[in-house]
Length: 120
Image 1 (spheres, rainbow, N blue to C red):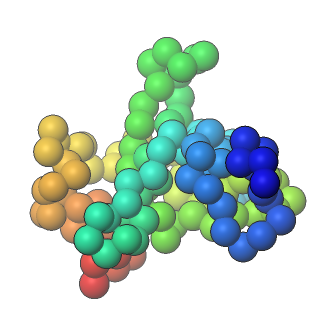
Image 2: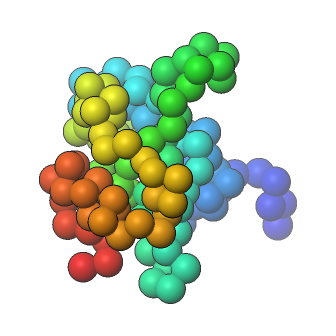
Image 3: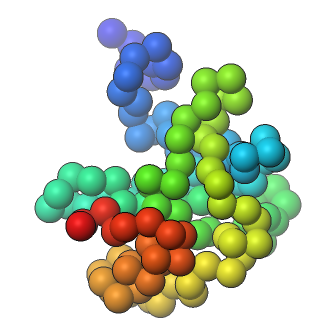
C-alpha cells in the first residue's frame, strides 16, 4: 500500500491528511486551515484542531486551538465546516504559554465555544 497517497475513501483519515485541510463557516466562506491536531495522550481523544487563519502567504497568521467537536467534515467542500465565525476566533481566550497543560484555560475555551470539554 502506498502510504504517501492520501486515502479519502474510508471512514478513517491520517492526521497527515488533516493538516492543511480548509475550514469553512456555515455560509461556506473559507476561515482558515487545520495547522495540526492536539491529542490527549491518556484518553486518545482529539482535543483540538489548531487552526491557522489570517495573514498572507503564512506571514502574520494567527493560530487558535478549536475544540475538535466543533468541526465536521463536508465531502462536497473537501474541508471542515464549523459554526464558529471569524469574530469568535479572534475573540477566543488568549493562550498562555502553558495552554496545553492549563486545565482552567482548556475549560474556559470549551465553555467559550459552548460545548462540554472532551474530558467530561
